[in-house]
Image (tube, rainbow, N blue to C red; front, side):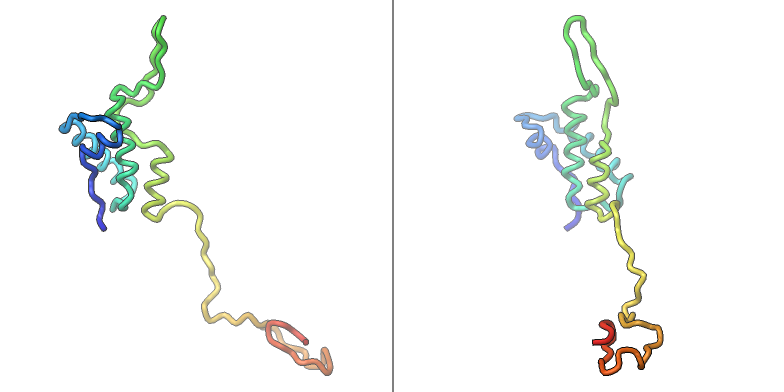
Length: 136
C-alpha cells in the first residue's frame, strides 16, 4: 500500500473541528507532506500520523504561540508555521525502517563452531573428543 496524503476532512477529525477551511487545510497538508519528504523518501504508509500532527499544530496555532499571560500581557512565539518535532522526525525514520541501532554479524554462514587448533589425541586418554564440546 502506497502513502496517501491525508484529506482536509481527516485533519478536521484529528483536530475535533466540525468545520474546517478546506483550502488552508489542503495547503498545510501538502506542505507537511513535502517537508516530510525531506526527511524520508518515499514516505512510509504510517507517515500520515506525523503529517496530521504537524499540519494540525500549524492549523490550530498559526502564530506558534506557546504560552500567553493575561495582564500584563506576555506572549512567547517560538517557531511559527509548519515544523516537525525531533520525536516526529524520529518516528518518520523508524516507520521508513531507518535510524536506531543495528547489529552486523561478520561470521560467515559456513563457519564451523568447532575449534580450529590441532587436537591433542593423547589428552584425555580413554575419552572421546566431541567437536564443540571437548573431551567427554
